[in-house]
Image (cartoon, rainbow, N blue to C red):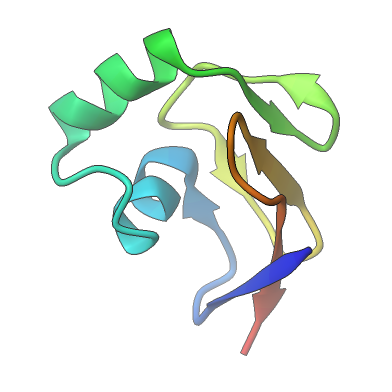
Length: 71
């Protein structure tokens, strides 16, 4: 499992996708979320505004899972 450092209390799923350079814009994130299975803490998620906190896990179809940590 890979870790992703965040410097704030939380980050949105759309911001995470941009941070990981999976998408370039919020609009692209919306389309990506419609077409790709993403699990947050084991539950399917398709909202780019979903708030993610340290210790949350994000599993993106076709990629290794990520765990958020606060740095």
